[in-house]
Image 1: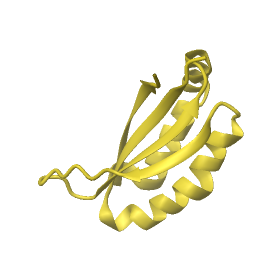
Image 2: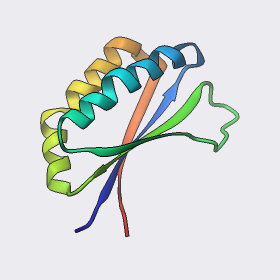
Image 3: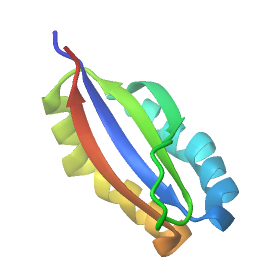
Image 4: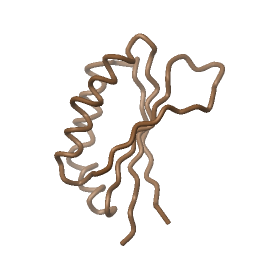
Length: 103
């Protein structure tokens, strides 16, 4: 069975890093794992430098077994996560998500 990685890359303003990281580890990751759709979270700092970028880029990845499970989560829950992030951090934490297929 194919496995997929659901990756979200965040650009976090330096002054928001600690509160965002606390939210990530204490709220977001437990909530994602609690859905039963996602496993094996990983957090990685993006090392590719952009001289014009202010803040820290962080990649957060979860394994997901199939695209149907991911699609259902996106339809039912993704907006809640985006709204929570926006209400807590506004434009000081930006994000985009991608789906990767493992070979």
